[in-house]
Image (cartoon, rainbow, N blue to C red; front, top):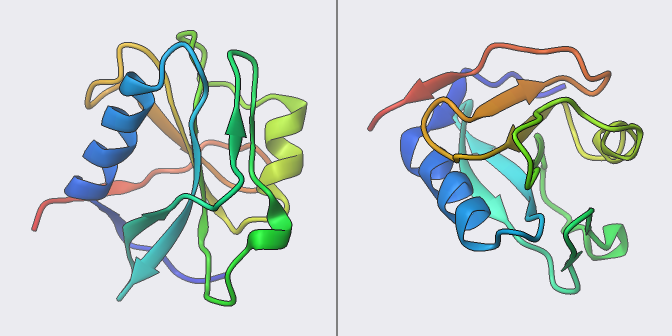
Length: 124
C-alpha cells in the first residue's frame, strides 16, 4: 500500500465539480499521488456511466501506480455498495465517494474493505 498523506484541494474540487456536472449519471476515475498527495484524477478511455453505476474498463489500467478510485453517487448516500467494494479491491487503498450537493462536506474516503478513513485536504 502506498502511503498517502492527503488529497490536494484542487483534485478534490475537480472530483466534486465533475460529479456535479455529470448528474444524474455517476462519474468514476482513478487516483494518483505524488509525494504522498493525491493530485491526479485519471479517467480511462471507455469508462461508461449511467444513473445507477459507473464502469471503468480495468483492461485500460495504465502501467503507473494507482492509489485508489473516486466516483459519485447521484443520491446523498455515501455508503459503498457491494459493487463499489469489488471495484475498490482492484484499485488501491483510498476510495472517494462524492454525493449531493457535491460541496466540501459531500464526500467520504474509504479503504479497500469499505471502512471510513480520514483523508486530509491539502491546499497548495
